[in-house]
Image (cartoon, rainbow, N blue to C red; front, side):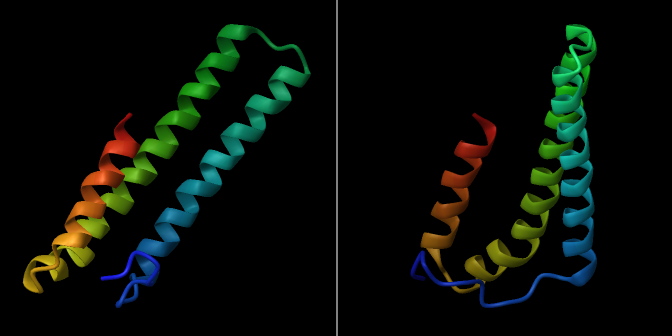
Length: 97
């Protein structure tokens, strides 16, 4: 599989919607952090909001990873596609840093 190719399947509309909703929530939290900094809010409160952003991003990543394993990696195993599995391992290394 060429790394420039797109997926050979479509992700479920429900999963896409869940990911987009989670990202929208994270964007909202991040916008709140920006506003808080601009308004010189308490640093402790800013840090709490940053933690909320981090949590929202991590949860979104977990959702994407689960979907990827259940679809893309499942297909890769069936098709003996080691390159896709290697790409997942690399992505996990980047995500968990």
